[in-house]
Every structure is written in C-alpha cells, then in structure tokens.
Amino acid sequence: CNSPLSRALGLVKDGTVYEAFRCPTGHYALVDMRLEQLPVEVSDHGGVCAARFLEGTNWYLFDRKLFHTALRPILKRLREKPADLVLDLSRVSFVAEPLLTTVRFLHNGLCRRGKALRVINASPLVTAEILATVPGLDGHIFTRSEEALAASGMGDPG
Image (cartoon, rainbow, N blue to C red; front, side, top):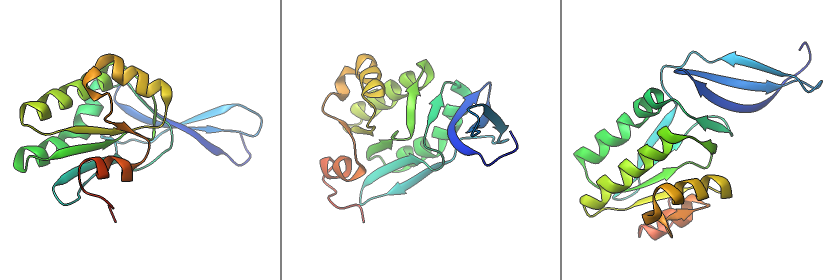
C-alpha cells in the first residue's frame, strides 16, 4: 500500500492498540500504535464526571485488561468525588463482553451511591447491546454530550 491512506478504524487485540488504514486499492494496513492504555480524557462539569475516548472514530473494544486500565482514572475520580458519570462511547462502534461487563459494573456501582450513569452513543447496534446487558440504562443513552449533561442537570457543557 504505497499511496495515501485513510484511517478506517481503531481496534484492540491482546492488549495492543492498532489503527487500521484503508488503501485506495481497498486493502487494509494495520499499524501497531504501541499504546499501553486507551487514550481517555476525564473532565469535571460542575459535579458531573465526563469521560471520553480521545482519538479515532471507530473503536472496537474487546480487550478486558486494556479497557480496565483506561477506566482507572475515571474510577479514581469517582472514588475521590462521587458524581454522576457521562461515559462517551460515541467513538465505539462495536462492543464485546469486556465493555458490556464494565458498563454494568459502572451502572451498578453508581446506583449504589445514588448516582447515575449516562452513556453517549449513536450506534443502534451498540445501544441495543448495552441495553440488553444493562436494562436499567433505558432512557440514559444519548446521541450527544449536551443531551447527557443536560439530563444530569448540567445544561451547556461549554
């Protein structure tokens, strides 16, 4: 693949993050990004914790260890200062058991503390998978961060 590449998706396999690039010929080239954890940003919006994946547009999350490593800063923040959590999974386009189990774990833990989990994702497939695993999130999955933050009583995140 010697011509310009367009990024197709990001994926994790066996603890390694890869970027897949599509060649004009239709072939794919995989590049090992050598990341030790997924790039996740944690921010505070007036009492609501927001977490989102920073890079890529198509994450396929199926590595339990790497995903749990990515969630450490989120869990640390929530232990220090309990709050509702807005988890931005809008860049995740396919889910596997580790992600679903983690979403269930986050939902249950927040509910025990009287807090809520809100998820951002526009993929009907991902939303259906999450709701099948965590039915309590019905009405708590949004397509835009503004909607999720507003549902947490935060209004405009800007």
